[in-house]
Length: 527
Image 1 (spheres, rainbow, N blue to C red):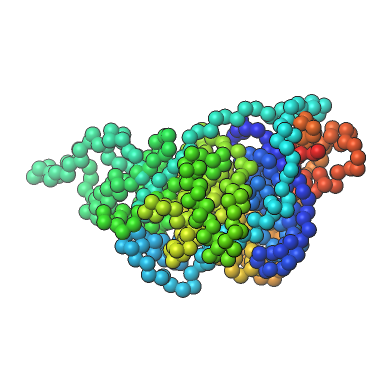
Image 2 (cartoon, rainbow, N blue to C red):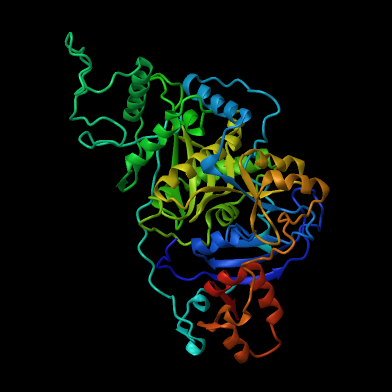
């Protein structure tokens, strides 16, 4: 990803936490992590951090102390481009299709994946209330750069953010695609060219000026695809969607005969005119909040409140608007738009599921240079029968594949943490193919190679090469960037000027956890 004209990340490191209650095994003091408050963060820095085992909850970014915490949490990613739906996934997708088209609410099968599919319990929510920053905004605004070590300023004006994208997905949630009548669509015949299948004249043989004969089955398939594209159109708020990418995505899912059905085959389905329901999926930017986000804030909050009370048994007074905002709306990620990036840009979004004009579920996601990262999901408990946790995860995988058409580097779907020691959290490993992050060398390993190791020990180094080391480890502490008294400087300069006891041990720990690259890009706030 090319460097964006954005302000540098500014973080405040809190160090290792005292043990706190684990939401998985219920150990009162067993959950251990390192944490920092992100006042602002570029999407590239956050991408690099989650590739070292970090994860955000609101603006609080934390990293489990893997070899000490009671329930080790391994970062898991799904290879979205190669994803294949399992039997249980297909059942969930068919169930949704039946409900939308016919209003069928029959309960499908037992033994289904947990309702909370791709999210952890609300275990991260407590982080930020124990470790919130109290630094004023003025202290975080760099005024100057100490050039003693040649550190250059990056305090540049941010580019004005493009208008928010509103991806509307109609009926089964399939994308609506606006195609101008006179604009040829890749893979479709031009509207100006009439295709005529005429019989050759007697004795002349095949007319080579005419298209070759095709099977009636192939013709029916093409007509069905064209009808589908006419009925389903994609609107972007403020700008038209590049229709060709979506057409190619549809065609690629249809072209291979005798291949397993893709997730798109279940989502991009033509529905009858008299369908019982209408499902629409909108992607709205949550930080900074777009006009569409603000307009739907109260309705979204009420869904979250009901979800917390019914699913997580919260008392009526607990899920306050302030908690909702700080946990699921606030984000340190700077909005970034690049020519070779997705049309919606990078940053933090809410993916809203609208059924017949009302919100029934919201997926909180981050769109990063190499992935879509799932943050959280909440839904209206009245629609639990639709397995919205699983359904939304599958939709987010399809969304990742869609974004890849415009942003080729964006290939993965990050599902947060995989917790093998907690059996009910193992379902994430069923989204195949998936990889787990080695907690020592930070390389990705296929989950199939990791599971036998996890059966023997809850904490594992997945990389079996004993000589392998963390390639991104800190090599030069002096190069760590610091923000001190509104001046950007290297740690080597700051250390000479610092008064009072040395903080080198804390800075060393911070740098070893974020790695050399991030430590040289991000600004570590020092009071």
